[in-house]
Image 1 (tube, rainbow, N blue to C red):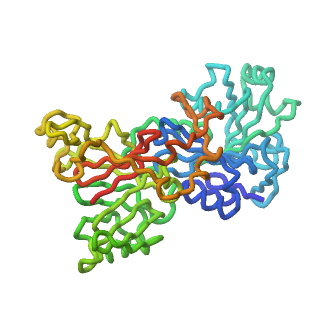
Image 2: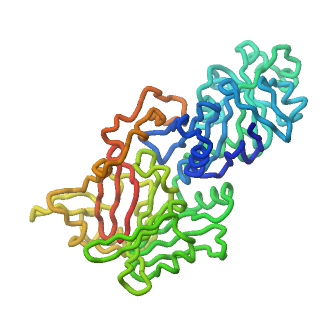
Image 3: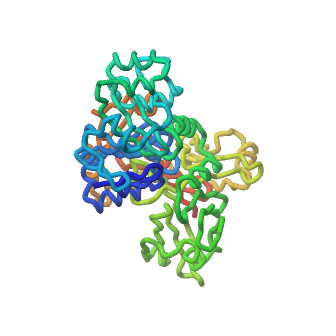
Length: 464
């Protein structure tokens, strides 16, 4: 029995939870093997990720920016799961008049969505979201934080559409209207939610957008985003126990004790010997980053930081939370790149140097313009920028004996969105496994960008 709380949750699935938190719940409840992951292969950072729970008839939709749960859909015709609201068990067959007259009461006027009509549109994005897998016209009854969807026959849809007051007309319909779906969201009405979601998906990833979404969805301490600069990372914090709004880690200077004091004990730690030097690694899976310390020096200063993007097709998907980051020009504060930047838009390009070495350059063709664009980032050709006879290093995680059978199951469904939210889906597409989890490492200045082979999307960034 799952409890429905409008504006908040269904059972243990709470709006604002991250995709990693939700999958941990599914693992505890022995439901993870009965799930499908639906996502855009070409735009995994721009379009929502959906987890479909086959046994329960539930779909969980996560925003692409912070990977937070923004919508819970109950498919009433695909589940035997029972639900309750305010202590009362909902019937298996839930009809319009029971919802309207007994359970929830009068509400805003309902809305008719007819995919065959061009006149009933919430705008392109909103319409496509609402059309999601619909077979015909629907009547949507919306309350604050929850809405009910009822299928309509073409005749009844036409009758209600032509009526001056469809709210009155639908009350007098003799035909029983069976509820096909229940949506739980944050917002006053379903139309408001659709409009807000469509607007969000059209926006460019910004600090302001993330701050707004965190404030709306998050409860408890979280990292809103990180700002990456030369040799440093500044974390913007929300609801920190000590009231901190930000915390900066400077390589070779910030001590281990300061990091642990700010973020708490790590989720895991490793002591590793590298070229006669001992390093300690703190894995903060819950925040999306790793910290490497030089324990051979007094007070163990930070030596390296790895930030993870939690991309669907990456090997580390669901192991780390997604940590969104931005890298700005230190002079004019223009954006250089962020966690959603793809390979062809990164601040370097591959050229062949006269001496036969392969050197990474900025997209601009002169060193003067190059330095002006990066502002504060020095071009160290002697480090990772100079790689003999290669433009990248292929990181094949299969070499380490890792089991990829779990990732290559049919639980991962690749979707061709065709610039729509989720209507044109190819359910026959499955990962081939040849490139699944494979990535290339591109060195630039004191950074290493890990780029996925299958999509060209960035999986992680390392500062050292």
